[in-house]
Image (cartoon, rainbow over all chains, first blue to last red; front, side, top):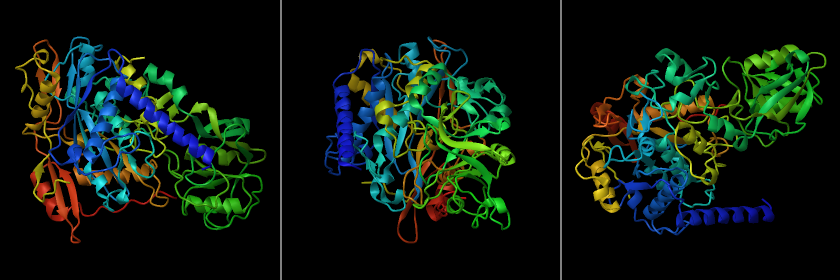
Amino acid sequence: MSSMNSKSAVLRRLAVVAAFLTLLASSPLGAANIVLVNLDPPGFGLNDPTPVAPVGGNPGTTIGAQRVNVYNLAAQLWGATLDSNATVFVGATFQPLACTSTGGTLGAAGATFIFRDFPGAAFPLTWYHSALADALAGFDLNPGQIDIISFFNSDIDDNDPNCLTGRTWYYGYDNNEGTDIDFLSVVLHEIAHGLGFSNFANEATGTLAGGLPDIYTKFSLDLTLGKTWDVMTVAERQFSAVNSGNVVWNGSAVTAEAPFVLGPRPSVKVLNPKSIAGSYEAQTASYGPPLQGGGGTTGKMVVVNDGVGAPADGCEPIQNNLNGKIALIDRGTCAFVVKTLNAQAAGAKGVIVVNNVAAGLPSMGGATPDATIPSVGVSLADGTAMKNAAQGNSVSKLILDDEFLAGTNQGFVRLYAPNPVAPGSSGSHWDTSASPNLLMEPFISSDLESATTRDLTPALFADIGWILLP
Amino acid sequence: MRRRSLVCCVVLGLALAGAAWGQTQSQQTPSQQLEEVRENALAATTSYQPMEVMGMQVWIDPVTGQMRPPTPAEAAKLSAEMRKLFGARSQRGEQPQSVREQTLANGTVMLELGLGHLDFSVVHQRPDGSLEYGCVDDSHRALSFAQQGSQSPATAQPEVQ
C-alpha cells in the first residue's frame, strides 16, 4: 500500500471513530432505546476483567469493558436507525460455540418471543418479532422480558489454535481488524436478526411457527414457483428452501436501495453468434486478476483440446492454438488453477470453466500467484450453449456487467438458499453472491465495512414495517 | 477467564411467560426495569438453544489463510460440523419442544420461542489434554459428548476443482 493510501485509510478510520463518537453524544428524536442486558456472571464474558489497552476508539481497559462498549455502540447504531416508543431489551452472553481451525460460529441471536394480531399489526394471522411488534403497537407487549437473545463465541479470545487458528476478536470501532474478527460487525449482525432479519420457518421441513406465516416470509419470493413463502404449501416451501439463486426478497424498499449498494455482476457477455448473444452470470476465480468493467477481456471462444482422456478438461498441456482467445474448459479431473495455467501457457487471454453438475456455478476456488489471465465459471447449461456455439466467429467478453447487479435475480436481491439446508443460515441471510459483501450474509468477510453503512439491512427493516429515522 | 466444567451444565434460559406482570414499566426506574428483565432471564429453569437462532459464521481459506465466503460444498461441510457440535433439532424435522402459545388480554397472541427443554453446554477433554466444548440437546448426548467429544470432525478442504 502506498503512503498516500495508508494515510487515506488512517483518515477514513479516524472519520469512522469520530462519526461514532458524535452518534454516542446524541440520538435522534424517536430513536429506539436498545438496551444491553448483560447475562454473564462476574469475571466472565462481558465482565471479563483481563486488562487490555484501548483500541481503535474503544476506551475500555478490560476485555469485558471493551465488549460492553462495542455492544452498546451497536445498540445505539440500530437505535438511531429505528423508531420505537418501547425499549428493546437485548440479552447477551459469551459461551463456547462451535469452532474448528478453519471455521466456527461467531455468534447467534434471535427473537425470544413473537406476536400476532396485536394493536397496530399490518397483517392479521402473521407473526412479528417482539421488538417490531412493540414498535408497531407503541408499547411493550410483554414487559419484564428480553426481546432478543444473543450469544457470542468465548473461545475466540483464547488463542486456541483449534479455534480459528488463534485469531481473536477485534474490539475497535474503526474496521481495522486486520486478520482478526471484527466484533462490531458481528454484534450488528446478530442484533439485526433479533430486530426482524429472520423468518420462523423450518427450512428442513417446510413448516411454519404455529402453522402461520411471519412477516419475513411475506417478502421471501421463489422466482421458480412465483410465490412468496407465506402462501406456499409445506412441500413448496421445502423445495424453495434449497432453490439456490431463485429465492429473493421482493420488498420494495430493498429493491429500490439495491442499485445504490450492490456492484456490477461478474458475467460472460456473448457477442456472437447472435443466437446466444447476451449476458450470462459467472463466478469469478479466487486467483488471477479481477474482472474489469468497460471493455472487459474480449476474445474468440475456443473449446480446448489437451489430447488426453476427456480432451476438453484442460488438465494436460493444451494442443490447440489459444493465442488471444478465451478458452472454454470443462470442469473436473484437476484443479481450476491447473486448467487456467494450461490455458495461459497456450496463449489464452481468459478462461471460462463450464460446470459439470446441473445446479449452480463452479466455485472457482484455489490459489496461485502465477495466473495472469482472468478465469470465471459458468453453469452447465450456459456453458454447453457456449461450447456448441464456439465455432466460426463466436466472441465473448469476461466482464463486470453493470446492466446487472451482483447478488440479484430479475432485479430482486437474493436470499441464501443453499442445498442442503444450513440450519441457522438458510433463508434468513442475503446470498453470498452479493458484491460488495453485505452485513447480513451468513459469513463474515474481511472487507466488510458495514459497521458504518449497514447497507441493505435498514431497507429490509422498512419493508417489514419498521419506521426508519432520517 | 472461562467457565470450564466437565459436567454438563444448563445453558442460559429465559423466564417463563407471565413472570413479571406485577409491576408496570411506568412505575419503575430504568435501572429497576433493566434489573427485572435481567433477573427474569437468569432465573429461568428452562433453556434456549443457540442452534435455533440465526448465526454468523466465518470461513478461512485453508490455502490462503484469508477470510472469504465458502463455496457451496465448503458451506455444507461447515454446516455439518456445526450440527455435530450443536445437535440439530430442526434438521431432524421436529418442532422445537418448547414453543408455547398464549393469548393476552387484548387479543394479542404470543409465541414463546426456545423454552421448555434443557440444553447442555458440555466439554470433552481430548487425550492431549485440550478441551472440547459442545452444546447438545439431551442428557444422553451430553454424556456421550463429554466422554467422546465430537469425534474430531474432519477439517474441510477448499473446493478447488
